[in-house]
Length: 331
Image (tube, rainbow, N blue to C red; front, side, top):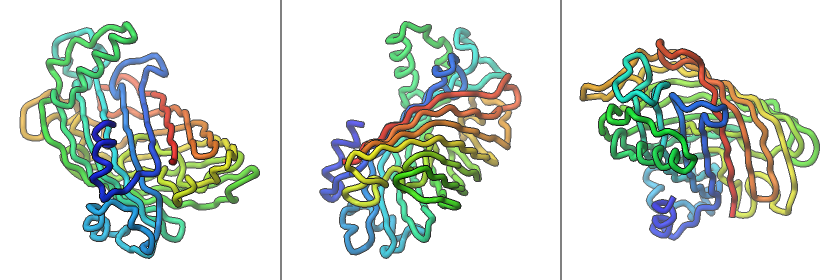
């Protein structure tokens, strides 16, 4: 967060109009294993067309003008910058040895830049990610600090975590707003399918899914994203609005979402790319089912959800459930 805020003045003097904080954790359901914590902070510019898009950071133009699907300056475009961390542990965190049939200890800390455009009801997003896996992700330190704060037992097996490895990823995802009954005052609904893929030494997968929203005063946006690369939806539609009027209007909705992935690589399960490390046999087909509630008031959006995730490796004893909170503010 400090890194992003202090780097903002260097970004062509531009100001990011939307701040979004994501937090995913299995403590919401009383567990502490597998994907146990995810935290992401994103700063986003508003969407604007070529005539006024000098709001984009100057460094972004060579990239956004080169990437397919987002390189047309006649379409509304936006840029986002994120920093985040994911933490993974085995089910039994009180053993100090390697537990061969349980998930390896792993931490990933990353920064990313996102490039987005909207055309004919379709949102295109690219996300380029640079990160670090291993000890220097400082996932162990963050988890130990958090457990000390809440007076919980420390995990004893972090000496066996996956080794340091630099990470480089490219992610693309498209979303469509289909079958929508409208936005603004009144009860409305919409369906937002998505399709994408990811490649790099962290993950290789193709994914598809959809979200269904229904409620009062739906925001004119592309739904509620979990911490999923390429799924940034909170950029404001112009300087004065974040998908809905800023004058205190209230809206709420319920949503159901699904995402299915064909997974060819997951470094947190397959282990280090070039070095010997703990690994487990991953599942190639993984699905997420998510349900939640979203609230909007003026320039603030918030959501609370639960995600049900199918087994990610063959020896995993059960499917996983975790909760998520997302809050964004446009300024």
